[in-house]
Image (cartoon, rainbow, N blue to C red; front, side, top):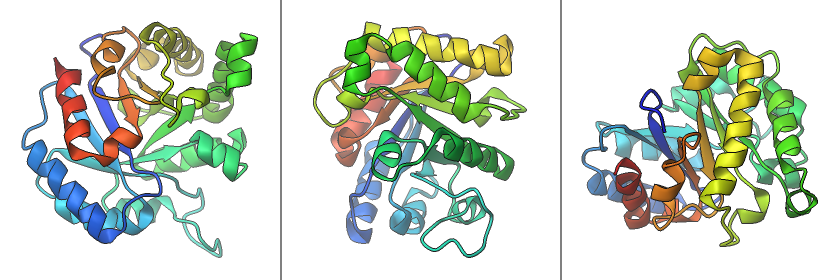
Length: 256
């Protein structure tokens, strides 16, 4: 990976951990990572209910806080939703959008992700834009086209002043939580295609600075091989992020 992009290890806690469990895990992470290795950035994305208590535990540490979803309107009669200004007030600097679980279970569209991405960038929060293909698309051999189409539709018209305002995470759906993992070469192939799509959207110089992560059963045993690839700039971590020992080990190995 080129030196101009800082490796990002991001933990997606999904719908896990009540307040007490979240505070305990955050405290364990701070203890396990008193200093984040040079060249690596660390992010955790707890459920909405846990954001404020986790923010308190992370105070003074080098671990950033993110959310798992947002709504594009700033306020109003949108029962159950959370706005970008609300996330910012809780201490979030990142927000995951477009995760396959949001797309599949809650029928969110590329258009929805586009609105969220624009609202987040305008509000000063970095979107972690997720894309990825289901197994049938992988087996049909059209996975690159599928992912590139998601990126272009989801990020079309987004205006960036700097490359650090956006992160993209490639997560092959068939590898999420299944134990199946794309090989490092598989990840590189699609992450490179994502970067080429970013060149079309934002120009070569901007695209070269945007971080593209891999997600999908990323763990301590495969993180070093993944981030060694030229277009893989870190990982969006699911299950392994719920164990402080595993997640902190991934951070250390990503820096080696």
